[in-house]
Each structure stands twice: as C-alpha cells, then as structure tokens.
Image 1 (cartoon, helix red, strand yellow):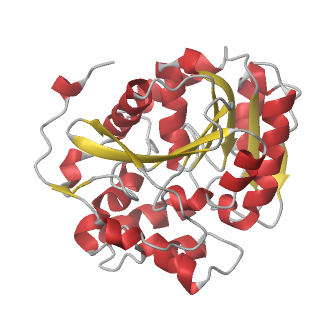
Image 2 (spheres, one colour):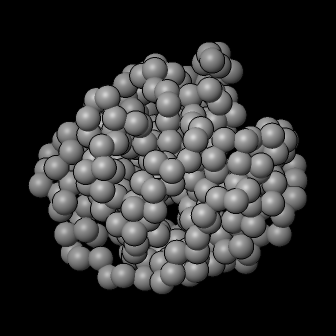
Length: 308
C-alpha cells in the first residue's frame, strides 16, 4: 500500500520531548519508533517475543497510556502486546496544520506502520477512533488479523442517526478556546483519575499548538451521508458482512456517544455470531480506565478460546 502521492506534503511537525514522559504513573514502557511519511510513529511492545500478538488501538484525545491497566494482564497471560500512539497523539509526531490530517490519511499512516513492522497474527481491540481507523486497517490487510474486538466504537457511514451528544462534542472541539485534554478524559470516565493520571494525559501536549490532531478528529467522523469517507465505510461494512473470524463486542453501559452500537456488529458480522458479547457495567466512554483489568481478562479468554 503506497498512497503518499495523493497526500500533500506536511509543512510543520511538532515533537513532544522525551522529558514530558518521565516517571508517568504505572507506565514504565519504552517506545519504539517507525518512520512513515516523514513522521515518527511511536509504539510499545511488551511480553514474550513469541507470544500471540494483541494490538490495542486508542482513540482521542488519549494515547497508549489509556491501556496501562490492561497491558500487564496480557503480558502475564503470555501475549505480545503492541500499543501505538496515533499520529498527533502521545509520543508520535504531531503535524501542526489541521490540513495535514484527514480520516484517510490516519488510515494510511497506521496501515503503513503495521506493514512496515510486518505485524501479523493480530488480535485487535479498538475503541473510539481506534475502531474507525483499526477496522479500516483490517479491510486493507485482512490476512494480518485473527480476531477482532470492539469497545465503544464503530464504523459510521452517515446513514445512521447520531446522538446529539456527538454534535455538542464536535462543536466544542472545533470552537472552544479551551481544550483541557485531561478533564475531557475525566468526563468520559465513571472513576476519578488521580492528579498523576491527569498529568499523564496532559503530558503529550506542551501547549495548544500540539493539540491539532485531537481537535480535528471529530470533524472527520462520517456523520453525514456525503462525508468523503462515507462510501469507503459502506464498502467496509460489505467486507465485514463476510467476516467469519471471531468478532466480539464489549461496549459500556454509560457512554452517551456509542450506546447501542454493538447491535450493528452483532447483527451484521458473521464472526460475531455466538460470541460471548458483554456490556461492561459502570463504565463510561473510556472503559479501559474504568474497567481495564476486567476487560483484559475477558479478552484473554476470548483470544484463547476461539479458533481463528
């Protein structure tokens, strides 16, 4: 896959210094870097090198820190855990011009990252934008994936009815002069984050110029039928309507954005039939924060008990 020629050249790239990530609470993991499109994309890998691979994809405005409660569970169970930071997030590079971002370009960046690292045999868990991007990565490179699980995510085409809460979020992210990443994440949780955890979520963003990606993500969601990626997502649904490998949904009960979204996957994806789908109780949008250990244990059982 090589689509570099269809994207404009990136004008200015910001890079959060390593000093911003020193001694973060419960996150001792060292990054690895892959250069794609002249950008440095960060990811962490933990667990035995010969372990079955688990790919964890975050959304916005989070980064791989979101998975710190789940990583040890997978490692203790013998899995090889791979957690990237999307471009513009975490320790990955951050183009500062909004025009350097698009839904299509995020898919391109992460697919190229996966291919360049030659990851295969993947068990995917994706949430929020991690699902909008991750499920399209599956479409691009289906043979690299053995199992899929989605939590509080989707693959919208604009043909659905979007909750009003999303319109509020979209307007806020675009127009608000104040964009407190840590408080936004706290608002999406049912548990109270500590001051150390809030700091960790602020750490990638030295100032507002570093927040371009997390500000523009909501504007790329195909919430209208004529969105530039609506047709591609419609085609992706046709692909998943033939997906027979195991597919699990783990949505929470207290997310106003994605509530009810699991039913689309359960109804349309053959691989979702007879799987142990669950609603994660007392968890908000960022269910990895609220119930990370519980979710990781469910996924370990799912990955171990299903044939690809």
